[in-house]
Image (tube, rainbow, N blue to C red; front, top):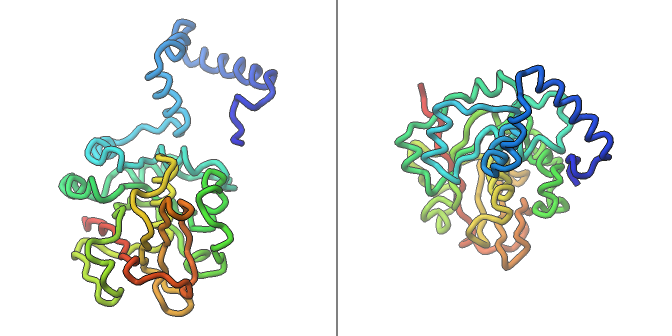
Length: 270
């Protein structure tokens, strides 16, 4: 269970609240200000979001991206809210100014976001994230099949996301299910992502919606190579199975017709 104020000793919570009030009074907060989050539900939710995201203020480009992408936009605040807890990082850099400043600009044009707003999701990565780190997150304990993940594989322990924005397709690339990897043809502005990127995409989606992707029994083929020189795929199992995803071994007998290609938009060159 998360260590919230609801499951801590009351005397300790009251002590912290007294200290908090002293600091806020010094900052100019007045007594009447306390009533607003009590009676105004929308204000209370905005205040909690602002607080939990490390007092993050989105840039104008991020605000515009959120307006365009809608529910397919995940901001730095979502990264902090979903993934801060459970990782043993002394310095969780998404909370810091250098990280937030580096991601101020969205590296995709408004035209691109409009084009992909229904088929892709936009989210920030973090250089300390790889698949084993995600396996340690309690929030995903009922979603990831830990026993099926071999942490010694290079694509597991050596491949990390970057401190950058990703615009990744939700479903397999159109018409890719009937073609082998070597025969796949992507547009010039798209590329095949690594398994850790697709896994992060799935984790974002799951943590927001509390359910899996809206399609079933398909597998996303990624850029990484396994020890057999075959491309790693991320398995997508829908409600007819366990509503979880995994990276199974290549000897699993699955119809080739269920394999599709993962894809993401390349970063714009500026």
